[in-house]
Image 1 (cartoon, rainbow, N blue to C red):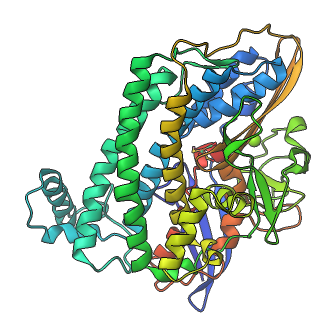
Image 2 (tube, rainbow, N blue to C red):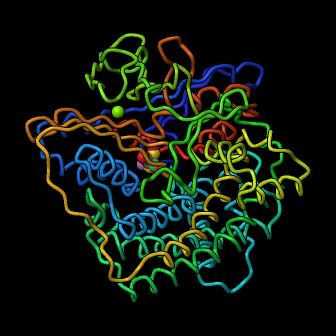
Length: 502
Ligand code: NFE
Ligand code: MG
């Protein structure tokens, strides 16, 4: 039997999932990005310093990550790098953008996969926000329209959390998370000029100043965010984990992980808060960018297959036979790689086993009487994303203290007529790379390989499925009309198709 989830909601962008189900289990999955955007083509012939302004528009969720990758690629081409204060302000901007993203992913995008929104009907308390939510859900339930107003209903029916108290508390946190998200945006905008799409990120640093009063204001928001992440987000993820333990066994990806390294801790940008590395067969390897290639056998492109992104081509071919996705298939040594919080945790587990994040992760798992092998799963991804959010928000407070008010945040440079550069960062959703080549003063080629392009990639030249496609196989589907289990698997990756197709 075939089931199609199209569009898969509560993610960013247009994703179509097709699964073959046999004996109530997924036996094959196809993951398709459904539109072409063409950012790589429209950058050609433009002034190189337009790149970070344009590529930030790839996405409103992670614009800062694209800005980081783009300015880093330009910096490599222009032979400049930010001063200490510039690096720190970038970490502060990107950190706040991460915290917003992870909070939104858990509460606004994923929680309603587990939490029963209809439990609000039985609410008898006096919280104004919850009473409003109650009215809204009631009116949706009473609506005669086939599709009542989004966002809560309709939904796939299935098994949701049974504990009324847990449901109502989580719904309250769903509402609180919106405030937290706005505050994270406000903190980022203190140094980014605005959010989304920063006006202050530039090759050479950040054009905003490091003022003592702004640093103090940022710190006070960061402390509120930390209180929410530690006191609300982490406990809620653990509560969901306790209510749905079987989701530590669903959603197993390829068990190959890639991280470029995120949040530089030194000006040479060789040490990172989120370490860089590759994990295959349970062993840590040094990441080597020359191993990346984008394959296109099943992608709607007639570019040469397997090209390194520094030489990449973007040649759309809408009617291509045997192709089903507008995503290329990035591969490392020809292998699919999972990227994102789980990949970063798996790298950290082997590279920095004594880091507070890894120690806390092990602690939580042992309280649940589980070992790290369960992390390659739906709940594993949610758990390590929350752990990472805590690590980033806590480190943001240190970066505030390391910033020196009044010192330069930007380094001047001469713009060369020719140059090539690679810019790598860890976006909230995983490894993000931009490659720029400049000739005669304009962009000659520009390529982006984006986190969700790795995770949601279609089959490659050897017909090997992408990470989400692999993770879907084996998922039990109790009711083919309500494939909520498959949706939970896909959402655990936090896919952003707007980014992935770029
Ligand atoms: Ni549109 Fe993004 C992140 C990037 S995902 S959200 O995080 O880069 O592929
Ligand atoms: Mg690309």
